[in-house]
Structures are given as C-alpha cells and as structure tokens.
Length: 100
Image: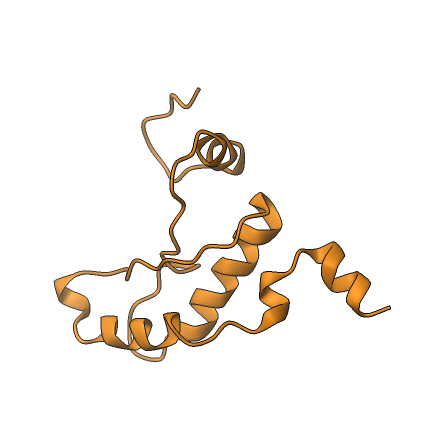
C-alpha cells in the first residue's frame, strides 16, 4: 500500500498502481517544457523506460507544463503523436531475439 505523502512515485509504487488497474500516462521523461527541449526524445525515452520497468506500452500523452510554457505544448504534442519506432515497443528480450 502506498502511504508516502511527498515526492514522485518510486518504481515499486508504480508497479503496484499498474497492477491495481490504474492508468499510466506518458508525461515526458524529465518534464522538460522550454525552448531547445528535445520533445521527441522526452516522449520516446519515457515510453522506453516504462516498457522496461513495467512491461507496459503507454499509448496516451499528457503535455507537461502550464500557462508559462505556452506555446511549447504544441511542440510536445507534435512529437508525442509521431509514429514510435517499432524497437521502442519491444521488450529488451524481444529486441535481443530479433538481432540474432
């Protein structure tokens, strides 16, 4: 049972939430929102990390930031909905097996 009141969730807590049927949404990897952010990398890195840690592929995206980050949300949106390269959707073992 999750009982911490502060800080971001840790992996065991995210696993517990996922197994309790909570939704896990992509919100970027580092929560970066400003000019010169590699938005595509923020999105795909988070997809890869969640896939590796939870064996789950996120299909939805929530734009990070707020009113002070306008108009960067549109940059995140454009990159968030680009096609994801197939290797990002595979587990490490699946990727390894394809290379053999």
